[in-house]
Image 1: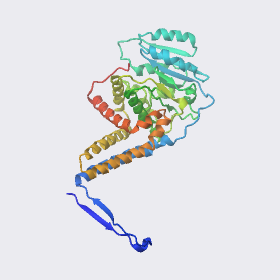
Image 2 (image 1 turned 120 degrees about the horizontal axis):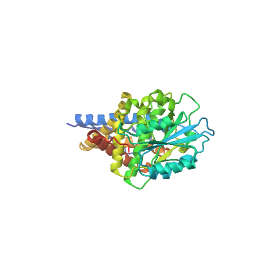
Image 3 (image 1 turned 60 degrees about the horizontal axis):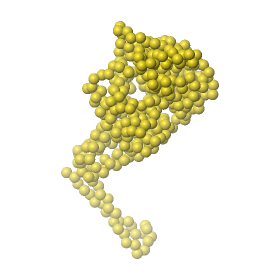
Amino acid sequence: MRAYFCLIFYPHKSDLQIKNEKFAPIYFTIVILTPLEIILLSILVFCLLVQLYYVLFVHLKLARVSIEEVPFSARKPISVIVCARNEIVNLEKYLPSLFSQNYPEFEVVVVNDRSWDGTEDFLEALEKQHRNIKVVKILDNDKFIAGKKFAVTMGIKAAKYDWLVFTDADCMPASDHWLMDMQQPADEQTEIILGYSPYMKKRSLLNALIRFETFFTAVNYLSFALKGMPYMGVGRNMAYKKSLFFKNKGFAAHMHIPSGDDDLFVNAHANSYNTEIRIHPDSHVWSEPNKSWAGYLRQKKRHFGAGKFYKPKHKFILSLQIISQFLFYAFFAACMFLSREAQYVALGILGLSIVIRCFVYPKLLKRLNYGDLRWWFPILDILLFLFLTLNGFLSMFGKKNAKWK
């Protein structure tokens, strides 16, 4: 049962010092909601507060952090590692750009993982043109199940230098100062650098969704790294010490998991003392996005599978983030079936959420090379939520994909 109260106030004439003025009463209506409406709206407010924690106390750090300039000089030599399996088109298109890096001493280690598309011939020709390329060839072997982690391990073993920078065959550095910015810091305590890799722009809804999802993933892992809680990185643009890899026995702890050569390694060994981030525009690495919904779903299923093996505290903060967002939209939808007054309150809560986030994320979209998406932020946010919900459902009940290519 709902009760309404009408309060009437009449201003005192002497306070206004206005003669012959007619005073109209001021009405205030107080609406008492039903217990069900109070419960639903309270949960909606709680979910909003949880989301605002991530927005204002985590992601805002990345929006406010100053971007350091790219160093002018090199400190130590670098080994760049690229793993490829039937990537002849991408290798021909992007691999030459690595050799134009403005860095005095580096090598490019390319791991040819059982390719049959002409990759071997292309790499042999490239070896004749560049002295600083090293090709590692992996042959078919029935005695083990090869995968990207094995390919990465072989590349690391073949690397000459201790500082390793990783990228993929379908990636291109944003500038010839990429290695200069991803080099080993002067602080020897730093063992891991987390970079950023945006996807190239195409004209399609899928492309917009991919770039928006990549943006939020990057904002999350870069912001938590700034907060002293690094939990993942992306193999398209990251770096760490070879000695760190072998000191922790490489991927031995999760070799049985098809994915996770990048994020699971960072999750296991990164901490607030040994990890830094790089977001200078010159340090970005552009990557080719998926061109089909099916391919993108397969990629996200692999990533979802790796997330199950994160540290408990990381799984908690990420699960809380996703669950609170799911409940926020779910309870907002439920409030739309309540009274008009409850609907107005729910719409106000949603509006407040959008307004606050619009002060943070458009700036981050511009900073992370996705400025064109800031005008579509509220719509893409809802579409991404629906897609991640679908992907989570398919990942839990769908067939696992054990192949990296």
